[in-house]
Image (cartoon, rainbow, N blue to C red; front, side, top):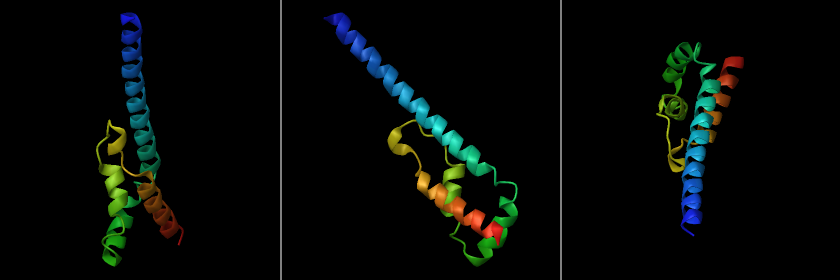
Length: 93
């Protein structure tokens, strides 16, 4: 019986680590995608801050926040996507 409990515990630890690594890779992939626009970001942000100073706050939180290891600490993907959509829309104009 002790082998079964040890096996279950080992599986639980491995599963937790797998989920943590998977979440970290997802965060890194999101940031890589968002950083494709970073070249023109500095010029754009200086121009847009004159019009609306709070427009890029959520975008910057996603880009410049640390990589979280826990599932509950992950920044909202929708915040980054929303800001990315605004950025792309304004660049097209």
